[in-house]
Length: 278
Image 1 (cartoon, helix red, strand yellow):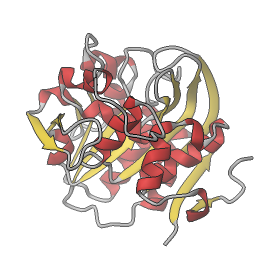
Image 2 (spheres, one colour):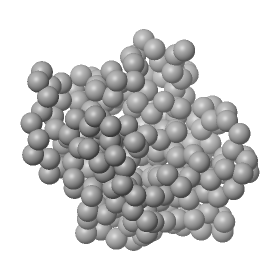
Image 3 (tube, helix red, strand yellow):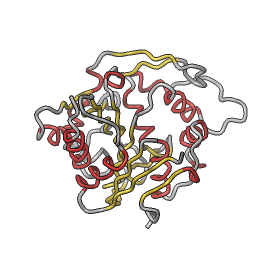
């Protein structure tokens, strides 16, 4: 069966996010706990392309509340040296959560650490994560579209690196292991592929409201696209985001590896609308 990606374009990011998740989340939500894993790795203002837009977060909160989720947690853990709650506040995400008293806005480092073994890991054999990743029934990766100086792009899969616990986030940048023979990517690419074996979101909702182009992930020029993408297959969502960014899949090592491992190709993705590249 082909993978499905919904692309919504419009001037209302709250409605865009609501419509995007509505198109792909068909499972029963009532009574379940939900984690919206946003991207606030750096501290900066909303709508600059640095962090996930608060309006997109609000659209997702509305959807899961209407579906009677038991608990909704919105959070991230920022890079080492940045206070996660300050980053969530600066990005306007905490204020979006505060509109809904029952929604929790959280520093994922505030949860217990949990070590996950990676079977047949190429670069790493285990990783310590925030237990928030595993304490929730539904995990949604909610990144902002950005270019990245090391990984090429930050999209829904790269965004999950923020669930790694505290200084464990630096682990994939400190690997001294040799690459496999005939490697199709760099060490970081294989490290990101490794963690998808134990840390893969149930849904991707990619915020393309205001994107970042340049020497990301901490700096670059804002680009207004006014789109939100969603899928139940995160790598498919990332691949369609690459199309909108006009970046070939072959240039992004971790996505090329993960797409191959999960047997996802552009031919196996159905996008609505079909003319989304316009």
